[in-house]
Amino acid sequence: MSEQFSEMIYGISPEEEIWFRNEFNTDDWLLPCSYEFLVGSMTSSTLWLYSEDHFDHDALCKVIQRFIAKFRPDMTFRLTYACFSMEFLPSEFGGGWCVVNKENIVCSNTWKEAACIQNGI
Image (cartoon, rainbow, N blue to C red; front, side, top):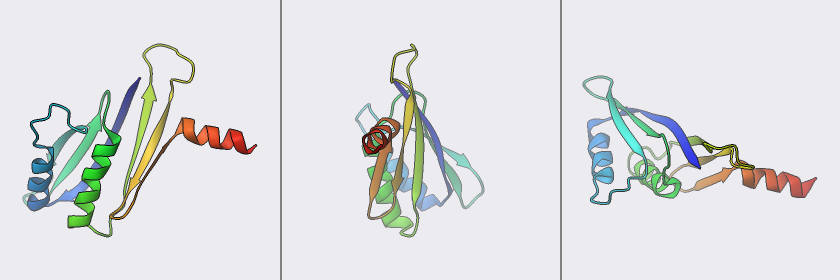
């Protein structure tokens, strides 16, 4: 199953960019997701976070939470993603979401939510 997402954090300062680069600069071959800094101006850029195949929800949300706590304590970050299979397999299509602030990380997916609704009706 593949997972795809594309989200941006706007107005990244030079200090924030250095912090993100240090967080993502690892000897480990598996980053939580792909990323690029898109130049916006001399004083800020945009961080583009994305995945074309798989990504580590937990690790990415923890990095985002550390960023929020350090630089933007009033920020809430929202990520939605799509899951799909290259083959038409039963129950292999759906997606999920994560919402992150300085204190909480809350994630769910279509299968979990559908099961909750199914059990409640």
